[in-house]
Image 1 (tube, rainbow, N blue to C red):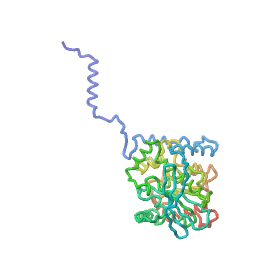
Image 2: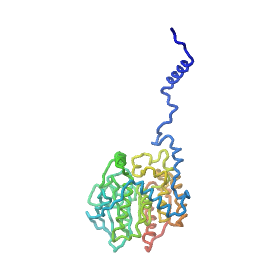
Image 3: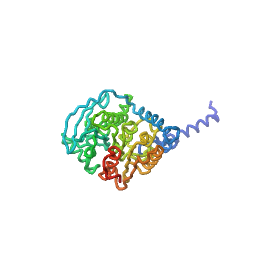
Image 4: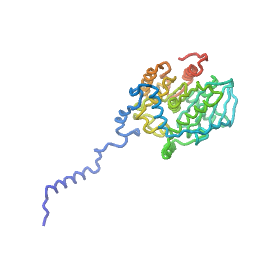
Length: 394
């Protein structure tokens, strides 16, 4: 006996036929990622980058109240506990230079890590104004602190550092130039560089992931160690504690404005070649999308609360200089300009517009050349050595 071909059976058959013909058809699906390592819906995500806790939102009546709140947001995002061990510095080696001396000093940078720093000290009587120098990334890990201060006693590092200085700093070591101008200078290796490495480019993701697996953060570790470096300088009897500055290039520039946000001990900050808004940087083709180096700047969830200029502005109205190269492909002018506009609004709101210097160098790329150094060093002298005669800000 045959089974009647009912209407329900017909509909089921048609449905199955439709399913069969579309079985490999994925036009219904939004792709998970697009070229450039961005999620397919990144334009919507970029539009949502409207930081909830920015001073410019007008939710706070007192800047001091907002600053305390914003600083605590950043500090909490580091996922790094406070350290309490004494620094216990020990001089490992020393070299006399022209008008100043260089030392390699071991110190407890945290309760977990004892590291080596390079320190330059003028031969004149202190207390001296001081500068924390923060090195770049550059995907070059054999040297870190040696990118900023001329090393000695290791031929390979000396050659590597000299080549780096030729490429980015017109052949000059930034730390040594500042020591000649009367500053006590310090530089440490970020985790993975120099004496704390060298690691490979591919190891960055694994290192950062394993920090997270321990409930900690690679970016937070770097930021907290920078904070402790300022604290170490401030603990030294030959340092003028009221005149401690920070200068960083590239990733070091990021570290510089971040450090100024975290510490009231920073009296002036020079940021070279690392600034913008996250909305302007999170676009196809930008360098930050490569992922590996980004782990040193990744504080989960913080970007939804504070943008880059919001974090830097925690330091307002303290003096801050920010340089950008007109030919710097890593930081689009539109992203930099949008960030600078926010910065100027905030400094102006606190009566400190004259304390903020932003400048684009049209003919330069991602570098800190001698002509930029002259302006930046004169500017630092203005705030950290107020009694010193200087050629003036250009």
